[in-house]
Amino acid sequence: MADQAVFPEWKAFLGTGETGPVRYVAKRSGEVERYERSKIESAVSKAFQAVGELEAASREGEGGAREGLAGEVRAIVEANYRNTELNVSLIADMLGRNLDYVSRSFARATGMGLLDYIHSVRIAQAKALIDGEPEMTIQAVAAAAGYTNCESFIRAFKRREGITPGRYKAGGKIAGD
Image (cartoon, rainbow, N blue to C red; front, side, top):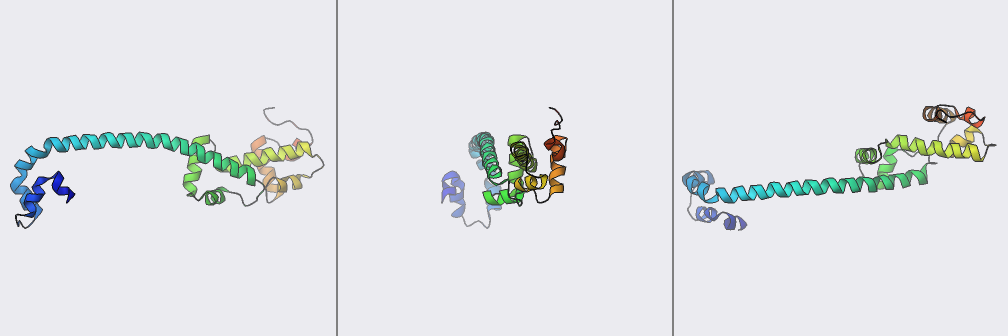
């Protein structure tokens, strides 16, 4: 038994016929205290040191894992932004991870919420379409950028760019340009 090697008193206890470990320890507490105190203090100290090292390694690993996860999320969004069903939940499912974990990790790594990132990719693509293919209607641009309806696209575009897509298409300036 491994405990017997660590606590020789257990070997003695197992052979005594005592009715319980509390009675045995109560009888031998003075001996155990003197004998084991330094060993216990040393073991506790080593355990705390090991826990500290593990926590530090975990923090370093989390940072790398978050960055790796953020890269995976970016790749998924950039490859699937046209999918009108693309959302945080679908991305978490695609990664086989918990939704909250994916969302928090992405936000910590990038400083941006995942849904905001999805909208930013979609709006950037919509602007590229408006600039590159001026004959496309706003409704067609909305659909090509992954929006289910034109109204939600217009709202998202204006919220992000400060101007409606129609005005942008007509040559209006974006706030900050």
